[in-house]
Image (tube, rainbow, N blue to C red; front, side):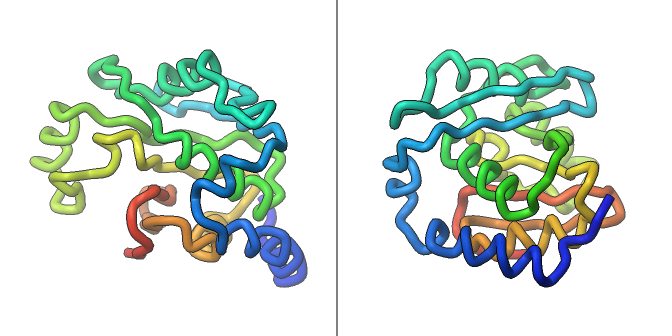
Length: 178
């Protein structure tokens, strides 16, 4: 695992900043193919998928992502926001990771969210996980603090930092941090 050096961070940020200053629809208008790799830590499932190509999101790929990021407790499948995938794609570029995103939590059903709220005051009743707009992740080759720093640099939504639980939360909601 390597930290994000100042030089690598600055170089990657220079390439990502123009994207982060564009409206969200502008990234979708960019026809460059986009792919992501995932490993779900609770199910052991892996997915390597090109989800955007030819200027459009690929429905079969999005369905595969929805299935992988389902609520693993209830098996409920939600629709993952393609903008969340674009955020992860930008994090991949910024961190220069060579590993898949390790998934702790993607979509969350109302039943699971209610159960987690009973266990922890840190779970929001209106969590963006319920809408497929949030994901809890880590990367095997990027230090957690560096992943958080990269997510904050994108200014693309919420960023939660959970070092004791070893993950970073990112979402497509308003820009905020905790």
